[in-house]
Length: 301
Image (cartoon, rainbow, N blue to C red; front, side, top):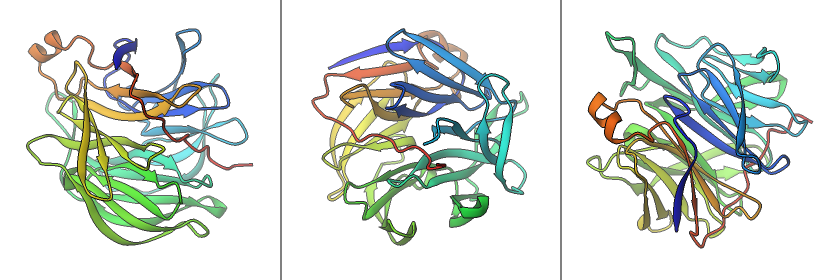
């Protein structure tokens, strides 16, 4: 196994990696930097666009555009001008914003919100208050509510048979499962399948699933990505990184056998930033002996 930095010191709170198998590039965001990145492994270079507001996540679309969740709206982003064409918006409570998002196996867009606090220095910290929800972008450009009373709406994943959706509300310290109706996008029968001890850290960001239907979860504060069996709740493997704030992970590469991992500087002290000089970088882990499942684009065409 090999862990390498592929984009160093990119931003403050990197999140939401999504492998675009059409362009063979990786989309990810710096939430507090208001920026979407597109990393090209073949050249080692990246392109970026600043949308002028926090950006929770971004995904490619079937038509070749980019769909993103901004502070309180979802829309299409123009990479040249930075223009944000609103598709749907919400009147969110104060100190609430969009966070992680992902498309289901047929291209429906799911996006969630979270509460946050602002420190005297102006820094944003996640709040444990349950102001968040999980939404789905439906026809006629409307956001329907499917889960309420959420602290931080985070990771999403679907099983290979499309019958189960996994979901993370970070401060619940675990992963929940729902029965999933792939025809309608409806969810039901919520239950806990993985519990992560609070002393370890909390489950963050883009949880991803591999070809064996095992879950890979970024553990914020633990410096690791963990592989779990959601059928038994068993921790199968821990992949350690040289920074503690791990935010998201996704499968990429031509064979979907490379694990891309985003990290952050948020919540680190000045001393910790000196010893973790790669915090806020994009990592790639290879040689895991496991293959992932490709991310779905939003079906706008």
